[in-house]
Length: 110
Image (cartoon, rainbow, N blue to C red):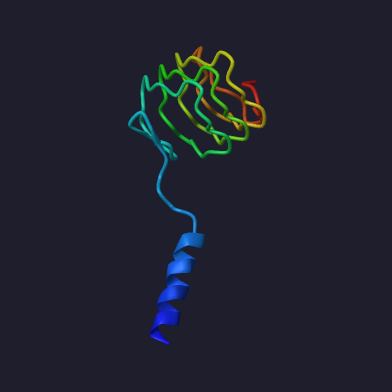
C-alpha cells in the first residue's frame, strides 16, 4: 500500500509543471522587475507578464513579445527593432521615445 502511494506521488510530481521563475541574463521575467540595460535580444517572451517592468535601455531586438502584458512598463531608450509586439498590451507604458502609450495600445504604442 505504501509503495502504491509513493509511486502515485512520484508520477504526479513528474506530471506537474515546474513553477520555477524564468530568468534571462540575471533578469527575473516577472511583473515589476527592474532590469535596466538587460540583453533580451531574440528572447521568447510571448505571453509573459511584464506589467510595470523597468526595462530602460534594454535590448529587445528580435524578441518575441506576442501577447505579452507590458502595461505600465518603462521602455524608454529600449531597442525594439524587429521585435514582435502583436497582441502585446502596451497600455500606459513609457515608450522608447519617452511618450506614454494610450490605454488601448495593443501591438503598438498609440
